[in-house]
Length: 94
Image 1 (cartoon, rainbow, N blue to C red):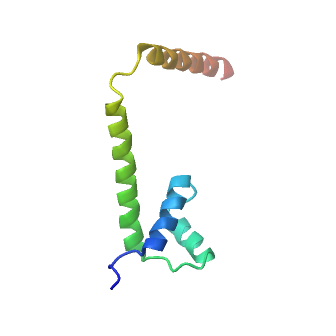
Image 2: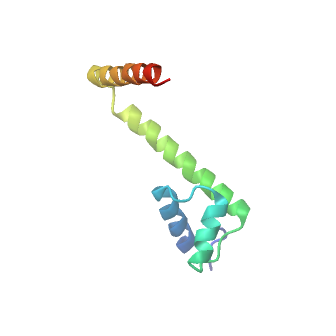
Image 3: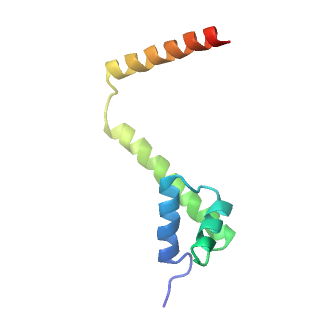
C-alpha cells in the first residue's frame, strides 16, 4: 500500500529542481513536472513540501555555522575591506 502524500519519484524530482535553484516557486515546479510527464502533487502538498525543504536547508546552514566555531579574524577583516571598497566604488560611480 502506498503512503499518502507526494510519491517518492516526484519528491526526488522536486528535490533536484530545488537544489539546483532552477525552481523554487510551486508554479515553476509544476510546469517542470508536467513537461517531464510526471503527475504533479496538489498545490497545497507542494507548498508544504517546499516549506519543509526550506526549513531543512536553513537549519543546516545554521548548524554548519555553529559547528565551525569562531569565524577567523582574517575572514572578518577581508569582508570589512571588501565592504569599504564597495562603498568607495559606489561613491565614485554616482
